[in-house]
Length: 272
Ligand code: ADP
Image (tube, rainbow, N blue to C red; front, side, top):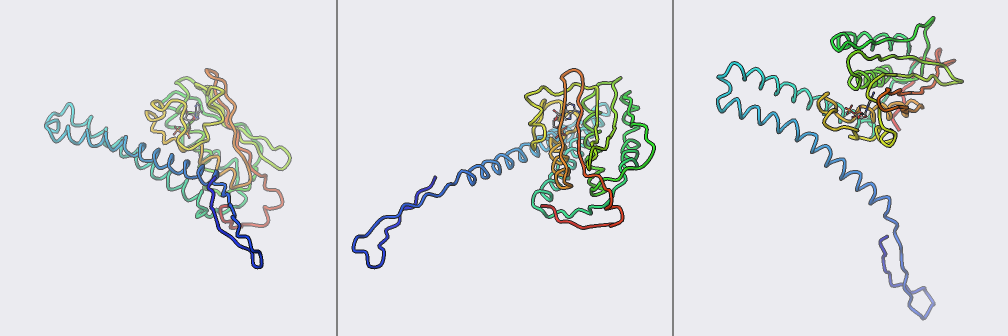
């Protein structure tokens, strides 16, 4: 706490007094620490690919450019690191827009089944290359959730990307859903490496990774799950994980079911 000392004398009171004012700055300090940690994380995340790009470029300029065996490899390295920087900056912009409330969401009745089909199609090629079986539950009809169409795609794509990245070849990734009361539970399940219990709560934090090296190798930014959680909360839902190391993980996102809202059409809301 910070203490301010004020000399005070009430009108008509012959004795001067002293007023001590205690300001509780715990929350301010905590916010300042979070901000500092965020800036330090961002700087570190930007520095790593930039240092690699610099090293590749220097090696090329100091002669490797004339060596046909090496120049392609180094140029490929530059391209990969630049792609990583690009992904990181896009994720950072997204998270800062959501957190500052600058993002407006077109919350409408979004067709869940159609959106899952779209995201599955987008991942078909990579699953083929990695020999991962990607499937969605069989369904009889469309289900509508209350969300922003692009936001729902981001949620599904981030979860499917992770499921594929953290599942070895020969594994399975599936997407299914169930209606429970006025919510829809969407589950992205994999048979991958899993997440140890003590890490499970923290994986939704910005930049938190169980294995930093592995995440970077996969091109991860460390922001995917925090974006998922933020978006789910913006739409009035939530996100959670259940996992068994060595067995796989199930990420569940619950979103409000669109029932009567179907007739209302679009409703623009400001991120809280
Ligand atoms: P990243 O870009 O590192 O994947 P995320 O925010 O998407 O960042 O995920 C945070 C961390 O959670 C990952 O680095 C990884 O350690 C863990 N993780 C996320 N999804 C899975 C999964 N399906 N299986 C195992 N670990 C996962």
